[in-house]
Length: 250
Ligand SMILES: Nc1ncnc2c1ncn2[C@@H]1O[C@H](COP(=O)(O)OP(=O)(O)OP(=O)(O)O)[C@@H](O)[C@H]1O
Ligand SMILES: [Mg+2]
Image 1 (cartoon, rainbow, N blue to C red):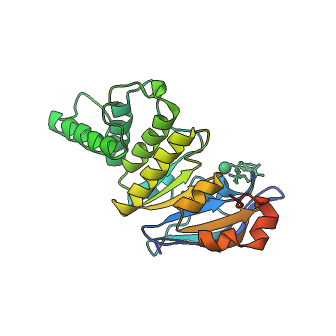
Image 2: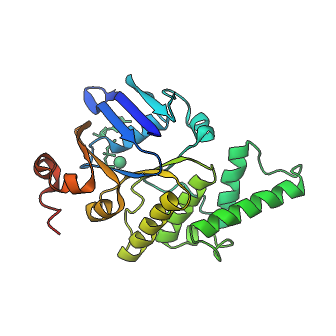
Image 3: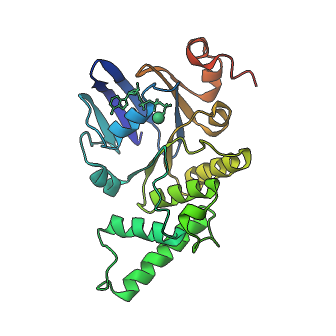
């Protein structure tokens, strides 16, 4: 297991946004988290990535307790994330966006004092990542002018700039055309199969989740109500009744 979560809990006032959640994520797998709006999926990501602190519970990454670590420290240890809304800099080019992420990983900033060789290495690294996410040829395009699907790919590229072992993606397929969803799904599969990355995905497109995932955790009202393979989830009556309303009938 690369990621293990025990009894993770976060309340907002009286609301149990995340309540005693257990999660086990196997290395080099695609593990999806599904559940209705407000189930606590994004809050769970915020807790795992250190954006907010839990009131109780523990998070282990590669067997080491990382509960309460800052997002920056976790990123340096190999945990990256993409957001429900993209985090790209729209006024910068595609290449600049990735180069910026690489520099932030290295704790350096763009400056006139930066040695040229270092800058060249950053750019080469950025191009290499853009190749992986199929953005080659779009390096000089302003990120804000990219089509929606490519903005998502760029988001993933920015995550990859941290050289993560684990990447958490919050709704990477949201608001995309069918074709773009297929492209991103193929990209996610490639990250697992070619780079050996572990990907935890929050996603509402249940059909895609079924095809993509090695394992699925279902949340409702802040709690885990099921955790199983796609096949088992498909046949799970509790999940069906609580949330899916027959959307597996396809
Ligand atoms: N900072 C906050 N302060 C107060 N309540 C919050 C906060 N963040 C989230 N919540 C509440 O916690 C619950 C879980 O929210 P969360 O965003 O984790 O759900 P979600 O499963 O990601 O939903 P969606 O599918 O709509 O993205 C919701 O009721 C939400 O309104
Ligand atoms: Mg959410």
